Length: 259
Image 1 (cartoon, helix red, strand yellow):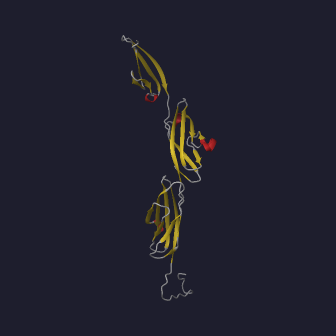
Image 2 (cartoon, rainbow, N blue to C red; image 1 turned 90 degrees about the vertical axis):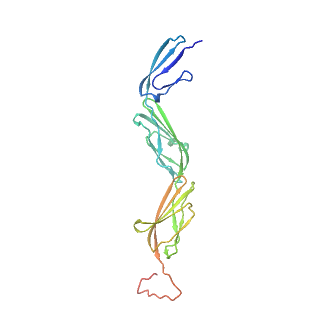
Image 3 (cartoon, one colour; image 1 turned 45 degrees about the horizontal axis):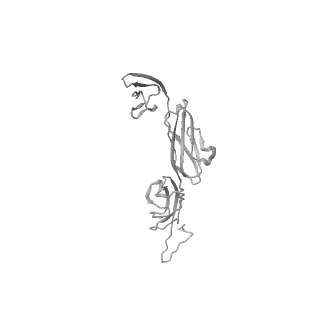
């Protein structure tokens, strides 16, 4: 029987006689590296041979999306290429996972944009190839949630003292359920008077202002996908003339009154 044993050594080499030896170029320095194979016979005789390998740079590919929120009618998504060692890369190959977009599904740009026609789940890939021909890829599985459209109205412009003003939420949620609704009531100069938090876009909020005047009301709607929208409207409350059971007389030519 042949009882000779072969042992491999060198930068990037690991393993043993039982499991075998492997060379991992990521564990070796860039440039030339020497691998040595030493064979020992059953009688203790040794013989070695060497091979010089060249380890080239391979980029660690990575990218992110600048936003994961899309309008219901679709929109542009931008990509931020965060690959290290870009100067060594000769070509970029993007696949946006949107086969229905035809040739627009691919790009060779550094930081491209792609128009997605609707929210949903997408698989996006980027492959970088260096001038030495070494390639590396990165895959991102992501979900683009739809962007809600915040909107509201109010029942009356009349200030009725202790009776609050009713605000009706008209937000369009789209495909993703709303997670939180925040109403912010502000006075002149933007001073925050109060904040009301709700979990539903169907809630009607009643707020009691201290006096007639001009106010700003913000409505922020955020869905379960983390996408949100804010709308701000100016609310002008006019004073209301309150009549009692007794007679009321006002001369129109003497004052402006409350008419």
